[in-house]
Amino acid sequence: MAGGWSRDGAVNEQIEASISDELARMKARRGPAGESLTHCAECEEPIPEPRRVAIPGVKLCIDCQQERDGIRQARGGINRRGSKDSQLK
View: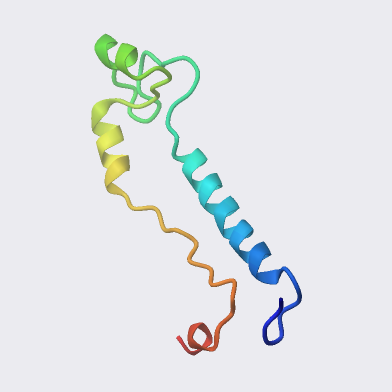
């Protein structure tokens, strides 16, 4: 059932696209993978052995990771519905 100017199934496509975007964003934040580095990829300081064991695939030292975690990454707030309210903002 379509409402207004949308074609049949358009709402479901929007929902699926939103879910796919969010899943891709979550996978990107999943964390380190692979083999741990012995030295930080950013500052070249040694990464302590207990950190490498606790977090397999770690690439950053604690200081660099804390600095990176403090930076908020913007999410793509796309309003796929194109409502009149979103166009006025």
